[in-house]
Amino acid sequence: MWRDTLLVAGKDLRIEARSRVALSQVVPFGVVALVLFAFALGPDRTRMAAGAPGLFWLAVLFCAVLAVQRSVAVESVDGARDGLRLSGLDPAGLFLGKASAIAAQLIVLEVVLGVGVVLLYGARITTPWLIVASCLLGTLGLAATGTLYGALSAGLRVRETLLPFLLLPIAAPVLLAGTRIWQAGMAGGTAADGSQWLRLLVVFDAVYLALGVVVYGPIQESA
Amino acid sequence: MAPPDPSPPAVFLRHAVALSGRFPLLTGVDLTVARGETVLIEGPNGAGKTSLLRVCAGLVPLSSGRVAVFGLDPVRQSNGVRRRIGLLSHASHLYDDLSVRENIRFAVRAAGGEVARIEDACARLGLTGRLAKTTAAKLSAGQRRRVALAVLVARWPELWLLDEPHAGLDASARSVLNSLVADAAASGASVVIASHEPEFVGSLATRAVTVTGGRVTAERRIAAAPAEPRDQPPAALVARADGVPGGRVAHVA
Image (tube, rainbow over all chains, first blue to last red; front, side, top):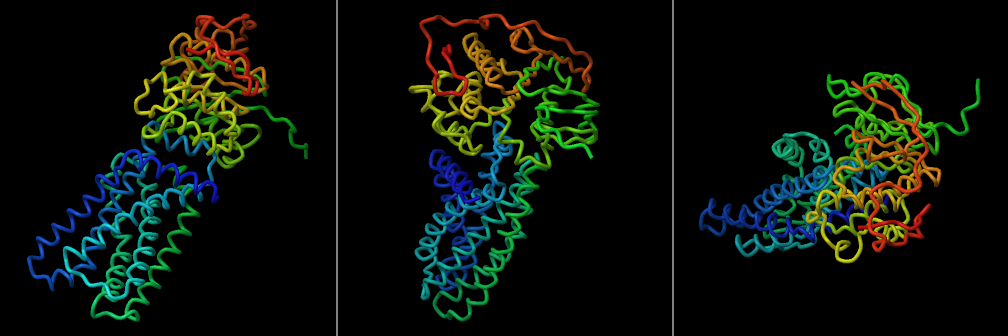
């Protein structure tokens, strides 16, 4: 399974390195979203700093939808999905490989957006480990749910519109927990405030990673 | 109770019915392909040739009837079947952003094949030099077909399922393909070729099965193969492929 995970993640990241879709389109989209949120909030720096955690995770969520759609689209051209099915790859390895590639792209995105909210919104981070932990756990959850629901929508002609409809409500706990943890990790918050939300993210990740490992194969066969 | 057959046929279909929604793809196919046999599936467009191959590959489940590949159910026991078969379909299963060599390497590694065979397979299909480094997006339809064939050659499966394999290939590539099919059969692999252009297949196959309306309607024996495959390329354009199982001198464009 781990060999297949590395193989598939390597393939997806190589494709991204060549096409640069995440770097040239998804990351700029996230930055533009942050700027537009700033316009909507107005010039009040206090209000912008207070809204920074939620807006950061909202931008990450929208970008995650784009990253997942790209991951699904790569397998939709020239029968590539059938090629994967025929190869006899371990479905669990396939799921973890695709999720890992999405997670790697989201981590890069979050670094850029994190710098963005500090510079644009004047957000002051006081507990960096909490911020980093929320990003890692949140990313894992988004990648797992995205890969799972991406596979569900893969065989459908309406997948571009269906995927956000499926994914955004499911990923709401990540948005909620991530926002609360960021608030705890910024000026005025305490680490204790964020710990229960970290636990929620751990449970969320464990559930969706386990679910993906178990059901990705049948979903892929029926898509 | 009778003991299980120690050497089941490569393909076994009985009263096989497959549907796509309500649309019938196969309407009761009976077909047995023995190990080491090369069978031509002929019939007009829409007859069910592609569906038959996809059923054998486990990509399309049966609604009723029975299918077994090497004695295994290709859907329920897909892990045991898929690494033993190779399907050359209308789609090439290539990633546009990866090079020819990267595509072949990924497909071979994913299928658990030996990476050491890739170079020989590329040489045999004429996928060397600059072409090997070209991204799949820049390839012509015929070149994509040759890359898909190179994956099969590098993997050298026990059952070759070839869907309109000559489509999009030029004369020299058709000749290479025919020599590959001959070598596969000589090495003991089973080959099923679906084609509505049987003249390109010539007498590579030993048996021809006609599919019409999703079922087998006729069957005939084919005379022994001629000494040389048709569409020979110029003798100067010849490459060796000694490392490929069953490999011998191949003609490349």
